[in-house]
Image 1 (cartoon, one colour):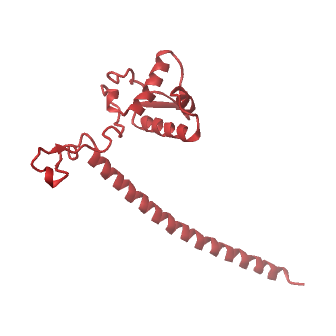
Image 2 (image 1 turned 90 degrees about the vertical axis):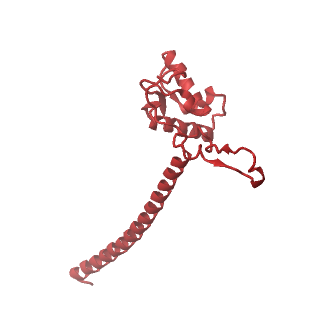
Image 3 (image 1 turned 45 degrees about the vertical axis):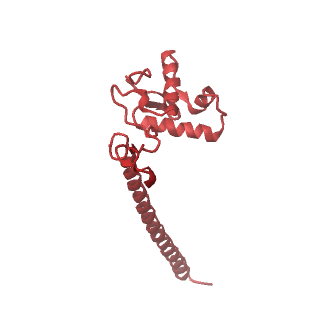
Length: 178
């Protein structure tokens, strides 16, 4: 029969091995996390740079004149348009018109403005999809949720409860945005 001290030493040794294994795994995960964070930061920087280049207000992309084909060089060159000019959602400020947004975002604002005018409460993305005549399937609902969250982040909408959206304070009718 093994001694009590011998059994304790065996358990201590097994526990120490387990701790060492977990530390090695933690180190590996930490290194993986650092690499993933680095990659994420690089993509975030790239996105900000692209946003800056494609921003309609920056003047860099929209004012650049390009002759697409050397044979057309004798024709007057036309300004190159930024990709999907209204695909970005500007931060809302007093007096900013809804026309600064793409049609999809304007539709979301319109349905919420109608509800607000009628004294109705916040709206879920499933209800929005139904009001737009879309199939209420997860892909459509998530696309609307993404747009609504973007509008919340830019100050156009408020989210008083998770998944329920309404116009932000100060945002009203499609004309002036205020």
